[in-house]
Length: 88
Image (cartoon, rainbow, N blue to C red; front, side):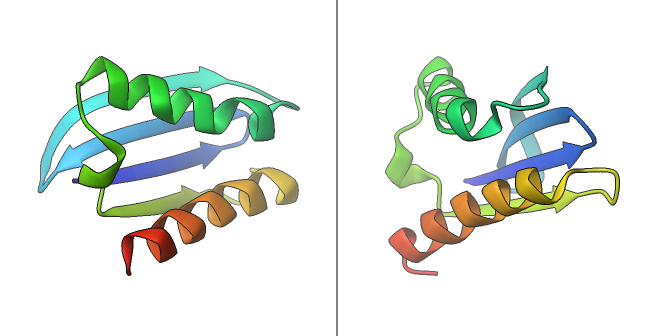
């Protein structure tokens, strides 16, 4: 299972994939509260699809140049921490 965090300016999208198949997508627009909302939104997406956190083996990021530096760092830090915890 793969979770992709996509940032395009203020548009944030979480995509849950199993191989090449997209399981679900959660998207929202946010400017200043990504650090407060990202982990709860991930929990919400996983809970909605009845997937445990341990089933997500890798988290990737896709960040455009129009995204803010702080938002990009938040997304990258969450992905790195998740992947370290999963053994990648």
